[in-house]
Every structure is written in structure tokens, then in C-alpha cells.
Amino acid sequence: MKLLIIYTTNFGYKPAIKNLESAESITEGKIFENCLVAFIQAEEKDEEDINSIEKKLVKNLKWAAKKNNTNFVILHSFAHLSESKASPKFTQELFNMAEARLKNANYETAQTPFGYFLDLEVNAPGYSLARIFKSL
Image 1 (cartoon, rainbow, N blue to C red):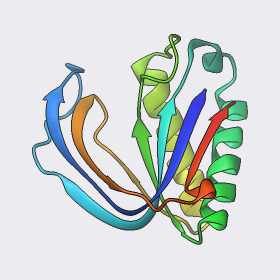
Image 2 (image 1 turned 90 degrees about the vertical axis):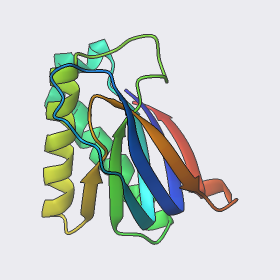
Image 3 (image 1 turned 30 degrees about the horizontal axis):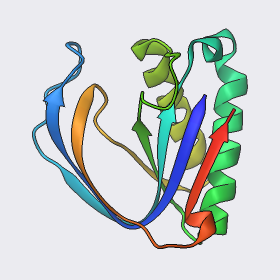
Image 4 (image 1 turned 30 degrees about the vertical axis):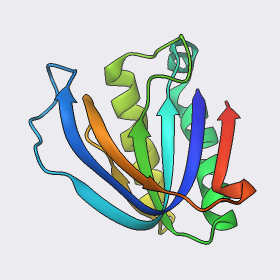
């Protein structure tokens, strides 16, 4: 898994192009404030043990959220961080598991629409822990 975490004062998206036929139809965008946005690429090797990779993902997200003084985490599928890609079904299941674990730990969460290229609006402050890259 490749994970790019960006703390944002404002983050917004608007669906632009549907690129996964099975994705539900979404036309409306959303805007969030004071949140951690996790740009996540699940890789083929991650499919060997979903429970292990999900725990590592959530651990890193909780750590980064604490460092950035936020309790709000957005999960965003971003299949441009590695040449290896997990299946869409696996990635969506991983996101749902991670979201459930975060909610169970009293984090506010959201997911960007899965299966879409999105127009993104990102306002991120310029300090070191506002941008973190991890290879899990």
C-alpha cells in the first residue's frame, strides 16, 4: 500500500469522470474543513492479508490525525502512487473496514466517491507533518 496523507484546512471534491462502470452515479460534490485526507493506493500484494494492511492503515491515519490536531479523516482512492494495483472490490472493502474501525475509535470519517476521477480543491498549510508519505 502507498499512502499520501495531507492535512487540509479545506478539502473539496466534485465528480468529474466516472471510470468504474459498477460505481453508483454521483453528481454532487462536497466540502470539508480541518481534515486529514488519505490518498490511498492498495497494491496487489495487500490482497494477501486485508486485516493486517487495514490495521497498518488505520494506525498511520490515527497517528497523523493526532499530529495535526484533527479527528476527521477522509479516505480517497488514488491509484497513481504505484504501478501495482489491488482490485477495485478489495480496495472498496479495505476502505469500508478502515472507516468502520476509525468510527469505532470516535473519528469522524468520509470517503470520496469510489470509481470516479474528481475535481479536487485542497488547501493545505505548509508545515512538515501536514504532508506524510508511507509505503506500508
